Amino acid sequence: MLRLLNNGPPADRVVVAYTDSPPPQTWVLVDGEMEGYCENDLVKSDEVADFEFSNISPHACNEITAFAEEHAVVFDGDPPFTLNADVVTEDAAPPLLLEVNLWVVVSDGTPAADVWADLETVFVETQALLDANRVGVTLLLPSADGTWQSLATWVWPTGRLLSPGDPARTIGANCTESGVNGLKNDPSLYDPNRLNLYVVDYVLDGNGANTGQHEILCAFDAVTQDPLPSGHDIIYFSRLSRMNASLAHVLGHAFSLLGKTWGAVGDGHTGCWWQTYIAGFANDNIMWACVPAGTDPRKTFSLGQVYRMTLDDDSWLIKSGLRAPTTKLCPDDPAGDDPCPPLALSWWD
Image 1 (cartoon, rainbow, N blue to C red):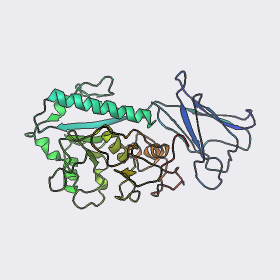
Image 2: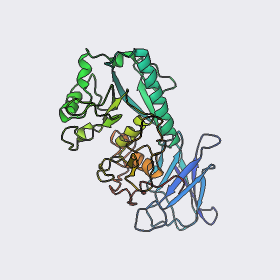
Image 3: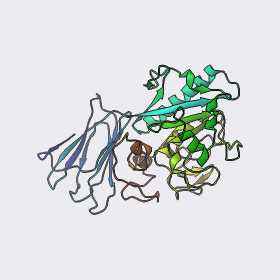
């Protein structure tokens, strides 16, 4: 809901209205200076959620985007700025609820309780990273009673842990066109309305060999490397080689961080080992591809990344209907700033 007042101080103001008290620290992005060009050119952060801008032109694209922990990203594509001193109020919203269709295959004899305890740690770590980076998404997992629950009330769904003898072993552990099509033809394992997460011992290549990957989104065929559009809602996750940020990393891919021309390998990564693919990023970025064994340094999404994850129409959050379409297709060039901010735009720029 928007409320417009024309009797404020001699400057425009953007107010984000929270039911929380005190309100969380908020970041606001406004496209308001350059006319005829959709660049989000004004960025401010504050703990009072009341922002003053001096040069918002009604002839610019005039978008407002707001970010805060544990709240959905607010997007207003048509705020009613005028030539007067305006106050535009945007109402904050609770986080999006992302239901994850989870299946687990164990073939190494690990006790079920140990498997579930480790996966609970994975989900807790992942939710903490999503919250800290203001992605505005809460994971909902299938619980023991058949309902979808957040981590606070989740009870291990033991019936979703499969052994090698189960017919459901046909989920495999790699991304091939035949494998994806096989999954999609099995409604007991695949849900077209949810993000599908298959936890396996190891991620395999097209020949059945361990790739060493921690996780993979089936956006490309493991054999041909051709795009695999039908696999954008299918994730394989290695429980035995995963790192702390592995699930958040692959969710970033699902949420549109998959640019074909971004990095040396063309898959949306910001860097690998010691090599930076995209200027402005370091190995603390969650979309960094290669990190050494041990402590995972990846903890951050940039503001530009979170903007694309939640507002680019290629994001699964929009494709699935969790967010309304924005009609935005962010440029494949990570330095592009129309109609989305540059990928490396920092929270602190």
